[in-house]
Length: 83
Image (cartoon, rainbow, N blue to C red):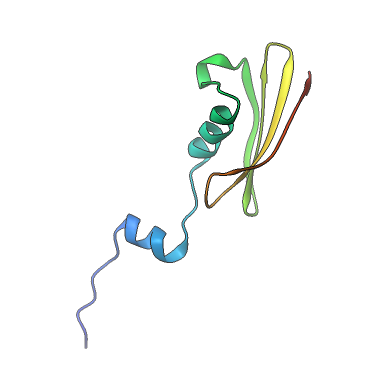
């Protein structure tokens, strides 16, 4: 029997593609509009929906909505509207 060792988290991510964390998805969305967590009034929605994170937050009377790829962290869709 071959001696098998466990894969590290980084190695596992390279094999499986990995999924970014919710915090990383929120950071990606905030970075897309050049904001930080301290800039927003409140985070209304942040959840994993299949292969994308759906994120919604408010800042100064504006509502921001994002779809962020759960694997790469890329912003797939973005909208901004008056709250």
